[in-house]
Image (cartoon, rainbow, N blue to C red; front, top):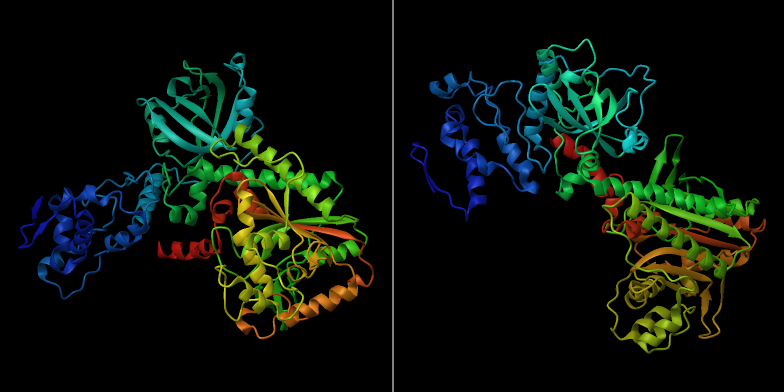
Length: 637
């Protein structure tokens, strides 16, 4: 189509260059010095272009919004006299409103599948606030005594049988309005949600108790109600002609907390979802059910350990030393100890084993750990771990407990998804009844690679192994490469992939990969290996377990070997302890019984059982990158 604005400017707009036409619109409206005010004042010239302003690409919405948020209430005094006359007409530009003047009580239209763009959002909120004030509905009352109040799930359960309705007993339901359907001036249907369930409410002027409001009062009381508002409604249970359980209101609904910002019908843009998780939870059932499944699974974990007489404990998160794993810690300080460098824990392991030394034979902890490392679809610097330590347990016991534990959670997840969380997908992998597949680390790799490993306890093993492979493995190279890292990458490339077919235990890792584990000489290879096992399911590490080293002399030697192996590494890449943990070695001198230790990444396990593909999907507010963006996004809005 051809457009002439009678401003000696001619533009060609076609469907093929629609995105370019949007850019043109931005330039057109942004050029206030030429004809912006004229265009806004005589909005008919641009009215035909308004459809192109809807359904903007979500990732670019904020950019468009910034252009359209230009306000001309204070124009530069040196402009032409014509513009000076126009400046008195207050005119605020934004995406979702027409240039034409609107009554104050008309709420700006909002796209159903997105949160309102940044600049337009404030205009929408301001209009909503003004409307509520006009109807004297902008209140946030305290809750009084409500002896007849019941939850929506309890209401649905109490009156689930047809024989129980209609009921004469009056009850009060409270919840968030999810839809408003008006049928004339005297009848309104609401759908309200609470306790993750919804119920229909019928508000009919003719059905209200005496004294009934006047028709005008009835209309004005219900007119401000919108999707997202939180209300309290008194009524009785009934069923419609279609058989739907409904609360028949006997009083006009009370607005408890109005929703000033519009609640969209849909939310699909990933960035918008994670930066507005509160809206995502209200709109997307899958998001809500994923978090609820996570809560149920963590409760099931606790129940499993409590049933086996484990003691749940909480160990320090902040200390002057981070140990228990090979990882880079987060460092900080405290005003109480300004001279000390403190660290967030990377694992609770050494604290828990101290408790076993103290006579607590079975302990477990579910809590946060922190590792100052990268972010990807399965890793986040802050994550939840479950660890347990059981005195007088060996590796076979740990594997047996793991099979029972994972089987229980799989069955529980399947039951919940089938009965409650139907938006989620059941885990596809089938678990064997018993005796899950096991492969030994070194023999399996030697068979696959058709090589014989050199003695892995020798200091020059790494270059020998690299030369032996002859470039067959696509692995990390450089000064930061260590033997444990190299071996771990080999396992990831050649062993872990078979866990897509069935759960897989990789057992008996080289001793250098588990400095806190007991070790022994493998009868098959003659190598020094650890009494360790890792469980993989669908390519993901689910659990790590080993018999704990309880010999204080051997533990000190392993700490020293670990430090020796890091000599020559760049300082910026330092990971894990930088000194022997003398306090832990001294604790071992009091006697640690033969103990089995076990750790599980809760986040990855929930991903597996919920069908989530990104770790951010099962975290309350996404990964760390998302979390640190929330406040900034709000400021920009």
